Amino acid sequence: MITVAVDAMGGDNAPYPEIAGSVLAAKELGVRVILTGPPAVVRAELAKLANPSLPVEIAAASEVITMHDHPAQAFRRKKDSTVHVAARLVRDGKADAMVSAGNTGAVMTVARFTLGTLPSVDRMALAAPFPNARGGVSVLLDVGANVDSKPEHLEQFAIMGEIYYRATFGSRKPRVGLLSIGEEQIKGNELTRAVHERLKGTDLEFVGNVEGGDIFSGKVDVIVCDGFVGNIALKVCEGLALQIFFLLKKSIRSSLASQLGFLFSRSALRGLRKRIDYTEYGGAPLLGLRGVCVIGHGRSNAKAIMNAIRVAAGLSRARTNEKIERGLSAVAAGA
Image (cartoon, rainbow, N blue to C red):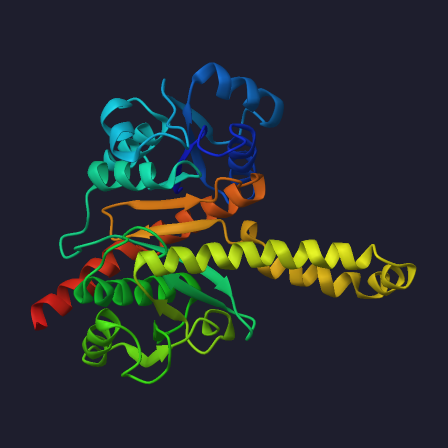
């Protein structure tokens, strides 16, 4: 049975969503969950939600890293934090993966220095899934693990992203694109032009440059960019999705005719909402580590936490890190 360590105190509304999501995962996914947090707090919530026979356990952690804590300072000063305890469970082989909806920078820092990176990895990358127009999923990386990257880092991101996509979504040969300001090879800045040259020389199914609209078009499966650009793209997409639904609700309430029209289109709109709802995708895996780490949105609800656990368990089950290590080692050997 796959074991996932879950930071019980990480999210904006913790601990309820983390604990409820963990209980759902234990019931529906057949995984064992270890919740890290103050035992009295976690036990009180569990008593309201869980059947004692479910494989949900508690690992004591006396400190919590808040969203306002500086990542490096939190790493050094809060050694008994819920994130540290979860990472140590993975490092020590007591859990196969970890999930946290906490301070992203702190989670990345703790995971990086507790678990370490794979031998051939220069930089970690956060990979975010997006629904696309073809009914599938496209993955954008890096969405924030690094704000400054070199061409060789983005080449590694592409390789890790392609392996992650194959392991998670089943495609034999995912199409890889480089996010730029135009499809032509000459378009972009010095970084993207250098990365384009490097990706052309790989065995990846590299289709060339893609533009921002292709994040959703389904033209490619894996979209590569540096973390500065990727994080901005991610936040724009999140904000746009929220704004669309806000404007849609406002429009529906504006007249009786609109409300009647909504009754006939309710099913389609619910389907659309499900497709673009971040809770369906769980979280973003932090690729390149010596262990599986999935970072959820701070606003994650119980469903999002359950799906983050699903992602983490799937990556562990597929031995994704071993595949990434082999893939990058092969590239390094051929360099």
